[in-house]
Image (cartoon, rainbow over all chains, first blue to last red; front, side, top):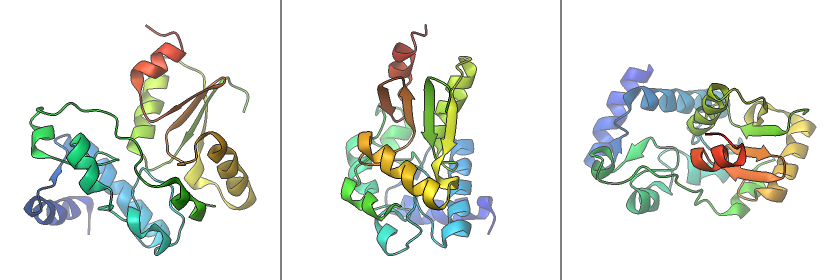
Length: 112
Length: 84
């Protein structure tokens, strides 16, 4: 599946759940390429902005869409890496701010 | 690492790319390590070192002398580097 196909495949599914791709489409394509690279390297789509432990079970919380997307989009209008945003964020009604890492630090014990 | 400015990044991270682009645009000399590209003992040691000041192991991690900036925070970076 190339990145354009992945874009269409995901967009439909995720918009139905209320999560929209960032309006900056070239940026989205770069993020999707990051996910594809991680799929090739680790065998799972680890968040492109987090260091993978190369352990699918350990990293299940950061397999995209990560479990932190919901609280992050609710609080900041954007997920950690900026791939998924709320409609309001895309409409410029929510300020684009830095989203801090919500993942508990002890989860990085798997990162060696 | 010889430069005062050190960037710990991930090759797939877009915020890390934003940081590199911003530092390049400002003409800042910096050393950069894509931590996800490291292997074995070198990787393990660096991650332990990073966790001392960055327990969440979040990236980008920018070190300007003793100051640590986690995330692409343009204003904080400009201030720390005395940039307009």
